[in-house]
Length: 373
Image 1 (cartoon, rainbow, N blue to C red):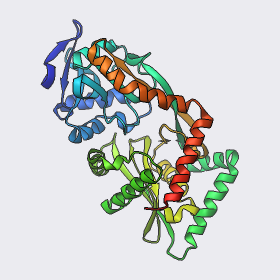
Image 2: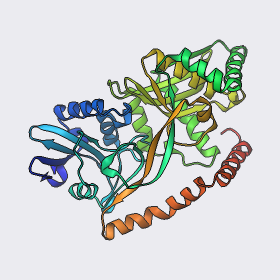
Image 3: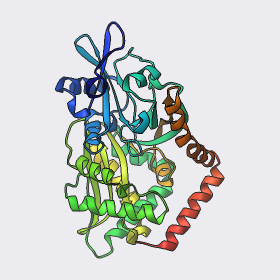
Image 4: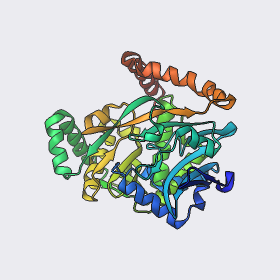
């Protein structure tokens, strides 16, 4: 199939090939976009071909399985292939929506798919809902909070006034206090193109990861390079959006995410710790929701994970799944041994809210003791 394994026959009518994402033809890329548009799923930019191609530029083992029926491409499965045939979702660890893009009715067997791709297994941590090929492979499911601004920002703010009046009142008051600091007016830029602002955001986020004892994603060159590439990307289905809250000329909070025509997928938010008492991150998210609604975006996907700010801002939830498909054999056993013990520890903690809360409190205490870096 393609570069790895030539072309394989899936059935009398359907054949499949595996290629590098950069080898996708213009026809295949357009078919991918059309299949996503017709799927009825939220237009999450992580599921678009442009995101897969951006990942492939920094992850050379990225591949795409492509199904053809007659003269038409009818399905796509992006993945990364590691040592011993261990497969992962494209952009695993940073991608917030994963899975195959298939014509309705096309339902290849998961293990047969892995065999055609030369994979012993395929691991995912944000599989989108309604992925029938991988039905039954999920070991856990998670809420991904969303903000619905489809009826406009005033309707969203009215909802916040009804369900979280104290939160909204306090956040707007802090925004006014920011403007009275004497450093200049508070202003918001929804789509900031200045690379220096992106560097500032990544520095804040790295410092936040280190303060709180979490893995610093921006310590990995491929993630840093990917974010920079995506910041420059401009396509209808997947564009990088850097939003910045300024006081005068000084940035105090920023967020980098991806957008399609109708969905803003929130990704990397951070703020200047010197302004923490003003909750600039919350102010930023309100202004992002307002600007997104004005730009025709109907949903902000805040992403999987528990956080108080998400609970305060959300209007609903999507569901994403974590798990793996494995083929019987020695390579699959090695994959299981390398992954399952740590996954079970994390699951044990997550399913015990008191234990998870104590863990978060400990990390926050350590962050306060360490102070800004």
